[in-house]
Length: 103
Image 1 (cartoon, rainbow, N blue to C red):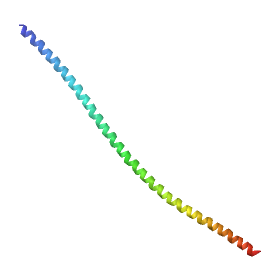
Image 2 (image 1 turned 60 degrees about the vertical axis):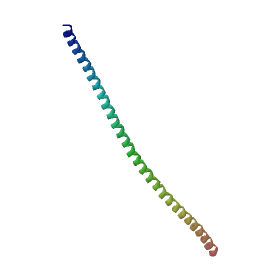
Image 3 (image 1 turned 120 degrees about the horizontal axis):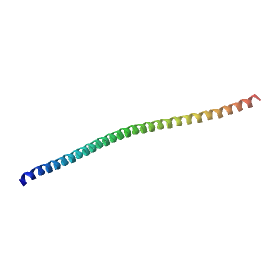
Image 4 (image 1 turned 30 degrees about the vertical axis):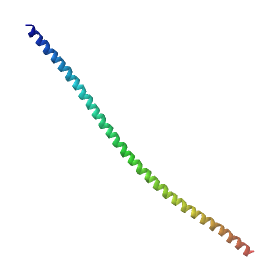
């Protein structure tokens, strides 16, 4: 009779252990799912960062191109300014010569 009493206790003990194991495994599955989601989110963030970097690189290249063009324009404007200054001086010389001739 002692063995028939121990079997229900043993069965309850096994059920309790099994229930604990199922709960523990469920917790592990939840933790694993969270880690997978974190990894997925990390990958998403890395992809977004890479896209942003490409956009910034394009913007930098465009800015460099614009600066190079502006430098060329500045050089041309300087040449034009020098030419205008020479013409103004030449014009002053001509005016002086005309005044001298008119006297």
